[in-house]
Amino acid sequence: MYNKDNLKEDTIGTKYKHKKRTDKINTGTVIRYLHGMQRSRISSKNDPTETWSRPMGHGSHTQKGQGSGSGSIVQAGKTRKKATCCSGRTIPKGHQTTRGNKRCSGCSGARAILAKKKNGLGLSGKLKGHFKREVRTAVVEAIKETMSQGLTQERACKIFGIVPRKFRRWANPKPTVPRTAWNKILPQEREAILQTACEEQFWDKPMSHIFVHGHNSEKFFVSLSTVYNVLKSEQLVHKIPRRKRSSPYVSAHDLMEQGFSLLCYDATMFPIETGIQVWALPVIILPHRYLLHIGHSLNSVSSVDLTRSVTEALTLLPSHLFEKLLAHSDRGSAMKSAYTKNIVKELLGAPVHFGRPHTPDDEAWIESFIKTLKYHREIPDSFVTVDDVVQWLIRFPDIYNNDPHSSLKYVTPLQSLSGLKEVILNQRKQNLIAARMTRHANWNSNQMSLGLSPQGVSREAVVVA
Image 1 (cartoon, rainbow, N blue to C red):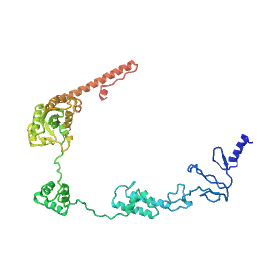
Image 2: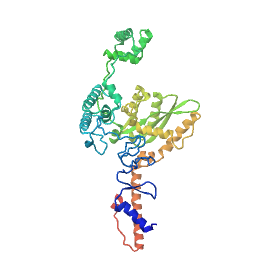
Image 3: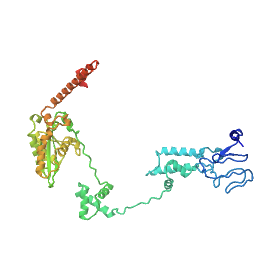
Image 4: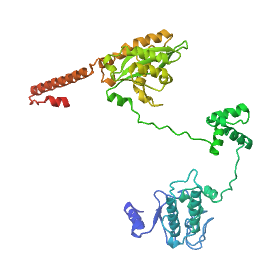
């Protein structure tokens, strides 16, 4: 019988005193290994459920797939892999490293050369998409050179960032075969286009006339782009030079900075439920943003309608603004007509100032007004008849001219036109200064009631604040 002390001493002597290697197989069981036995190789990488045979010395019985009795342990059905370099060659045991010998000294040099050549070609990352023939040839030569130094094709392609299949396609390209489109024009059609273009009646005409003549005369049936390509290939297309502006463009902002007042007008359409189009013709004066008049016309805008609206607007304009007054508009057909330009020039004594083509920002004031006219908070939900639109156009000037305008620092256009803008703004500034002084005095009185010393402040400090 062993007591607890003897059992503890025997266990300690087995594991530590005699320094015998032990391994726990089951919980609570301690195995003593004898001379000639090898320790089991169960680790976290192996399956704990795998069974290992432990031969007991020379000539012992072995299981299937296990070596003969030399005391060594061989796992059934598994063999250790040989260490190889990137080219597939076996590395001697003395040169093996702990990282699995994925590189060797010879292959490392090839890798460095390949990376350097890739940088020299200006390539980075994976090679995707289309490349020029010179680049493809350089890539193939670089990979073949490193392959001759011992690097495998797969490894070299991986370093270069190219798929091996693409490398083989680049190395052995298919011969290029000239292709002809099935819908290519016939030689007689091409000759007919050139003969038509050389006729004297088409020398100063655009290519669209040649295209139409070919279809009408049944000489050739091709598209306009085909006519252009044929003539361009024979260098028969004359490029029209872009007309340069003789003098720099003077914007409306520059004119207003020089003290001019601008009479702006435009046209916008109001559709109604009956299908009739009602065109509104607003006329405003800058820089006051005052709406002088809104005319109207049905279904279209003519020069007569536009000049009538401008004439009626000028009757409402104060006389002191006629001294430096110019008309400003976009390049619409009614605005650019000779009749409109002559009438406006007679009324104002100066030519019309136009904005640049396809540049609505040059007429931003009238464009912004049109948006307000069509999306105002008081506009009716819909217009049933023409009279509904006309009534809205009659009522809107009084609404617009008496609303504070953000570009006028929240002074109404009527006040700005009357010359009260600066007076109102100065009065607002004085009121703000007085209110700040009152708040400061109130704050000082509160400080004194709390037993604190008051602080003085000058009027200039209040103005700056």
